[in-house]
Image (tube, rainbow, N blue to C red):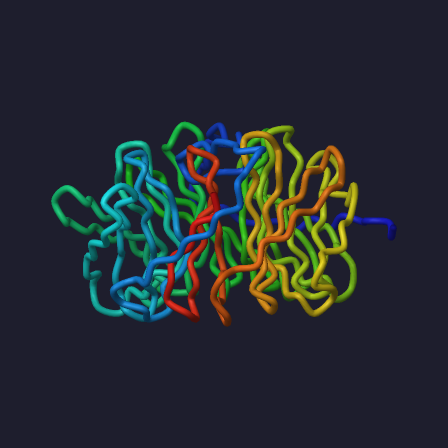
Length: 336
């Protein structure tokens, strides 16, 4: 294992930042704490979305339903998990939602990748509120919410920034970074961690000081997405070399690396962790989903029923079931 040396970047803050406690149980950071199904049956079901225009990034709501960002269709979709039917809402022109989450009040928050906003949809009324980026763009990408549900953190992939929305005031603050920030998670100490695909590294933002520390993950690793486990460990997919890594947030060092079944070209993309600490990752090039038991090192592989699925985000719901959205095949999938 190569030695990791941290590099600290000084950041000038636009406003005073208040630290909020993070959601860490199950690696969620998505408002709904995941459950666990250690004896998963392995049944896989898929449903075609009404508007299959690069639908992506599913998230569970407190009502048990699944919400989806329909990026190129400029919509938010909801899948009723009991009735097995969809409902859609149109978003403001040019929003092009990328990521989304649902807070404990049932409000849907999304990144407006196309118009530089963070949006909020109230499914009960259909009302949409937009919060504009101070810099006017930058491609808001992936978002997470803290445990107190007063703060949303998100990445600006194209703008090389990390964003913060104060949900009590609606104020949006930006923090400068670099190397194409992508996936994001929060650790138990309140730090904001993010993948820097362009720099083969992870970044850690300290909200108290605005300092960003970078931790190299190895040449060609291209870390893509990450999640926090119940024990506080960080899990990261290495899209560039087909590996799944466990990272110690106290040191930023790689604690262990797992070779995934599809190999270096498998393209591990999304990652999620359930309440028991079981880690899910998908291999986008082979239409497979892998579940790792870190306690034993056992990998269980699930072959998805469709070809060319194109999953970019997965989520474990409160019942411990895994949901994925096929951006390429336009189908919402469930592993249970």
